Image (cartoon, rainbow, N blue to C red):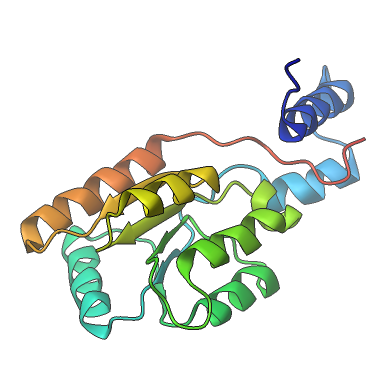
Length: 185
């Protein structure tokens, strides 16, 4: 027997709650106003979180983003534990997360699992992508089983890396995300 995902039920419940509350009236429900303004849609102007322990890779990515002239702030973490603390403790909603897999303390897979298991972070719909030198099939399979939104292998060529960054950012700038309404019943 087919059992739909619990997340599908949550999405339907949120949509129903939103329609019931705002069917013919502009936003008036305080809960919806507060939460919609905070978590309305993907924060395309939010910072790009890059979780990468290799300082040289951080420098290269920083240079590429500078050349591409995106307005998003770049926030680098060389420690996944600190990245998780930032994501859970801050009110700032990132535009997207680019994470390496092979990290000290908490590897990228474990970090993704912790983010995915945190309801507030999961429901904010922050795109989470792996950007790694490791393209082992077991990593790719494991990553997609954790509901990531992309797995990219870092090329050794600067121009190829730059093209991949352009594709990633432009794709997510065009992408829509669900509106999350907190406490929708």
